[in-house]
Amino acid sequence: MRSLQSLNLQPILSTEGMRNLDAASKEFLAKKTTSEPSEKDVIQSGYTLMQEAGLALFKFVKKRIGNDYGYHSGPFIAIFIGGGNNGGDGLVLAKHLLQAGIRAFVFSLAPASKFKNEAKLALDDFLQAGGELEESAKFVESFGKNLYSLRKTFPFVVDCMLGNGAKGELRSEYAKIVQIINESRLPVIAADAPTGYDSSLHICNNICVHAKETMLFGFPRLDAYTKEGGPAFGKAVVAQLNYPGEVIKQFDEKNYLITEDSISQLLPQRNEWGDKRHQGTAFIIAGSKDMPGAAALCTEAALRSGAGLVTLATTEAITPIIQAKLSEPVFCSLEDRAVENCRDDARSKNHGVLQPHHIPTLLDRAKHASAIAIGPGLSTNFGTFETVLALLPQLKAPTVIDADALNAIAMLDDAEPRCGMVFHDEKSKIQAVTEYLRSLQQPAILTPHVREFARLFGELPNSSMAIPSRLREIATNTNKVILLKGAPTYIASPDGNVYIIPVANSGMAKGGSGDVLSGIIVALLAQGLATPEAAVLGALLHQKAGRIAREELGAFSMLPSDIIKNLHKAFVQNNA
Ligand SMILES: NC(=O)C1=CN([C@@H]2O[C@H](COP(=O)(O)OP(=O)(O)OC[C@H]3O[C@@H](n4cnc5c(N)ncnc54)[C@H](OP(=O)(O)O)[C@@H]3O)[C@@H](O)[C@H]2O)[C@@H](O)CC1
Ligand SMILES: Nc1ncnc2c1ncn2[C@@H]1O[C@H](COP(=O)(O)OP(=O)(O)O)[C@@H](O)[C@H]1O
Image (cartoon, rainbow, N blue to C red; front, top):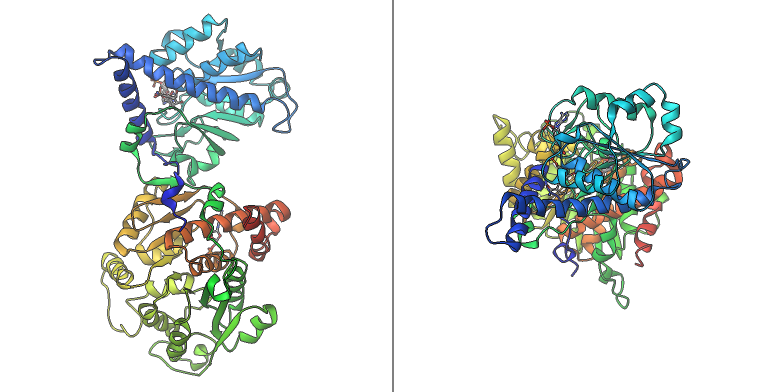
């Protein structure tokens, strides 16, 4: 069986974790050379790491020289450095460029006398190699009012002003340079963090470099993938440095970066000799009279994701509509009967939606399923909520709980058969939701977007930095996988690991995309993947197909159905 544990994924560190790892590694490496290292020995170890960082940056920048960004290639590279270690990285880069015969201007925001420790060693090496520091004031004077000349001279800018040590609003000399760089619209490559990103508050200042790419040193850092940091970091590229394995273990925060590269390693093994039942049978409970499309999208996505048999249970009011669209699913058409319940007074409201009298039929059909998805487009009808709440504890197969099924659980306090049970505050409501979920015997994946999440578990933490630990807590307490949809996607597993898919694609932010995701995941579960693997692989395939759809159709025009149309490419490019 394919497992996430076997993938050797890169841990994502917080800025604090990264800085602590840096410090501990310097000590550790220094102790390797002498049992009682002096401060100088520790600085020397730090410089070894800085040289690795600067070399990686050089290789990266060198690849960008030419027409990589589609801009004409000017003769010079502009590197901006500050007086800390981020500036030191820039000096190592500049030395390599110099030695490679590539002309670089190093504009320094700090006087040479300000450099100390590793950055001082880097400065000494740079000067010794024949390099010179340009004063940043000169840059402001020559280019500040003449952006045309700036654009003519430099194809792009390398930002080594401030890295993960930056705090608070930028000082005026930094702010002025950042404004000029931003106004020039030149592409920026940032080292470790874009200048203006406050690595202690984890927010962008008003004045902030918006990098095209940022090279992160050592490990992926959470800041680069959040909604607060992502727009400033641009595309994050990680340069692995030789941090000692023994030290890394101590700083693993159980958050892992996972990208489409891992798809092929997670795909379920197909049984070439097996019949349709060997490929998994998915049972989908979805759709209502006003939302037939949700059921259709979910079902078609499951069909396109490898399940041998897909059965759709939906109300008879919309069964013919979906039958006209899809030939392959088996249908479990749920009889519409006008019924009354204690909330929905108009009988007609209960027509064309899931109702308690459907439960015996659903349970009978669910017996044959290897996985179940429940929720897309079910409606917020009270009887539907009641049905979902009564049905879930009776299901045995691994289950994807999405959309209105999540809304049903969030209404635990209101719904029958718990009518009259009132939770007095949010804390007790969250506790009731947690207990309900924990009591479900089958493995399950919950796929809320942020509003569904808030209905179930209260608002997400204000800072994205705190989201992984909140999700970890819920996954552990409920013993269920929590997949938080959006950009990025977070998947928290009950074992405490959180997987982060660092993709932002506004073309996917459209009604119906989530229904597609549920369909993919239920098919993967049906094929025997465990819940964490099915959730992660499903989200990766979904995002990859979405990326391909966007490349073909653009973010404005692509539709959730185009994600399905491109699913085969997400699978096939990985030789499935
Ligand atoms: N082994 C290692 O350690 C490795 C570390 N590496 C690199 O080190 C970087 C971290 O270096 P760091 O700790 O020196 O911090 P850094 O980002 O350069 O900032 C400090 C400077 O910023 C200044 N400053 C702060 N706030 C400011 C503001 N608002 N506005 C203006 N200025 C402000 C502050 O000035 P001060 O306040 O002290 O006058 C000081 O000069 C890390 O991101 C990575 O690139 C790599 O080489 C790999 C190995
Ligand atoms: N900005 C975005 N970048 C990448 N993926 C996104 C973005 N916004 C939404 N998505 C994805 O699209 C899907 C939207 O799901 P959801 O909001 O439940 O839609 P619906 O319920 O209408 O189908 C989720 O899988 C989510 O991760």
